Length: 246
Figure 1 (cartoon, one colour):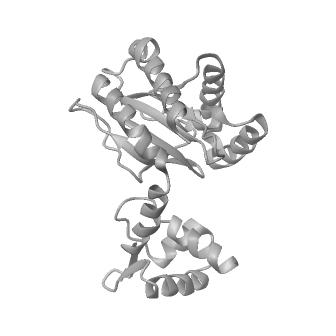
Figure 2: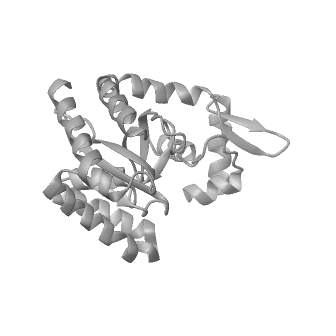
Figure 3: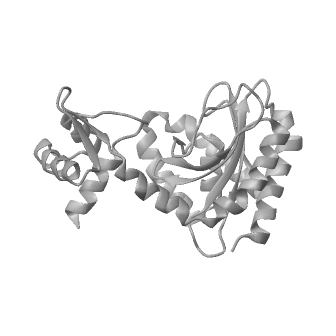
């Protein structure tokens, strides 16, 4: 079991598309010794989950890893059910609409519908964004019971370090907003030129919480537009989904 857990930690260490890492990089990111890393990457390479470049002595994720991700997505019928509603909102706003779920300190995109606006966020399925400062991450946090919220905040406090005092107020405001209005926002807090709104969806079957967001350039997707139009439409999207999802 320990070897399996460590092998998965190695695969998790690859954070960006196409990223190549050496043994030293992997040891730093996982906290494992270089000797342990050497044994793990040797096995993962033999199993074809990692590819090795002898010229650079670095590894990349190999295609068989994709089969795991696609199997996961295929087992989520809510993606297919939600997509028409997501595309409807994307067409209306011109902004991308996405669904995401938690992966430790971040949210990973599970589905995305493109809008018509030429100046939009280029975030695709599989990409990660910060849990603490993004609207979609805050929506996930806000949807949890107080005990679970406390656990998440404890993890984030350690992860954010000295930045925590700046991050916490935004999360607290988001929780209050969700309780009062049914949605969470991030106004230039995830990125300094991006505004976004998000609403969590809590599956009836006990599956992990999913959150839906709509985000775009702050000069176009303004606070006023979000609060008076886009946010209510996103809340309605999740309400409609809850009537048809299992």
